[in-house]
Image 1 (cartoon, rainbow over the protein chains, first blue to last red):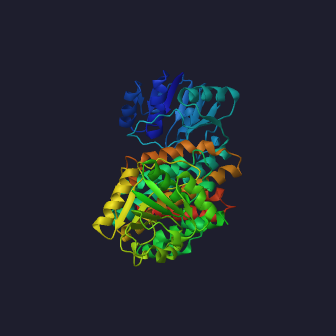
Image 2: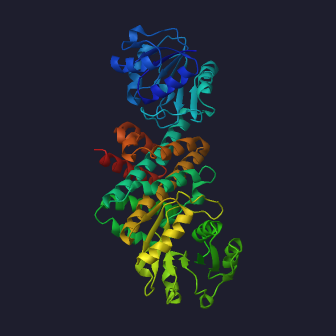
Length: 253
Length: 253
């Protein structure tokens, strides 16, 4: 498979390395910044471009991995191609690829940091396409990367993206808040890590509802009052504490 | 070491099994309910009692693992003992053990489910005592269970407990909210699990602040508006979304 990458950020880097390692030929890496394009292109043994008029028009797959609001700016340059053009955004509908004949979405549901190598083999690849032929190309590419592949339409993908914000982005922020509470009293964050790990591990084989613990689900009003008092100097954290405790109580009525 | 357990819930069960497995003698299990006492006592090869007047008065360690607000009801029955009396509560000060000569706290920072065996070997054991001799007994017992031992006073333990509510209890509820959003649209929760696992794994070797992702930290207003619109039928989730997104934005200003 001949693949062109549009974008050179975290998603492009991880997908590029995974596809290149699986033996596919990356024929170009485009980025608005030539330096960024070159940086990734070098790792993928591909030429770098910063000008879309020199786009390789004979690739099988064009993967768009740029910021969500930049996707539409690239669309005019990707018309009249034979290959499949797919974006990699969770929150963007397939329709953004207006006028493109063979189009799709190739969305890896994972949290990427540029610095860290990541095994994508169990990363859910969420696929959508406007034709069976286009879906076959995306399926073939996804299969090279991961054993977990899902066909989701744009509505479903939006909901999945939202669910991921709740379960992952917000959880990470709660880790941070725990960290900052400990730090303020000179306590080591290390002490919390085994509990965080076990909390996440638990739901591998249990429904989160069934393993909820803590004062709110027990209806332990006394502890909740004590906790709010401890947060007297942090009204912002009091609000988060109240909002989430109320939600837990309502859920477990 | 001769150990008496007061309580027969999750904490008593896990600590009891760990201490018994390490070769310590559990000399009694007390519970208000004889049936519950017998259930755990059988697993620990110990006699069960439901009457505190028949308490073994020659144990080295009495571990109180009952609901927080019941601890003080047991205190009058635990006076004039030679052994160390310790409660296992994160949110309760050592002072609750009024009049007891050798007292302490033996708090395992972990989330326990009765059904599931748990390796306690990296569970942080948070210890406090009112004398060096009492601390030595707690240290010796904790060492049999875990490699991670911390000396925390009651104030520090309160903050740790609060931090754990944020980082763990609240995170689990956010997993549940993600689950319920997917379920409402017929999507499988399985699809989120690798991302939840990676989010927790990431902070093993990174500070949560540094690995925050998602629309709020990017300042991606467009996606946040779309997400709130998707939650039009769930004003409770809209409130959580807004509260946590605001907190993320404020944190990463």
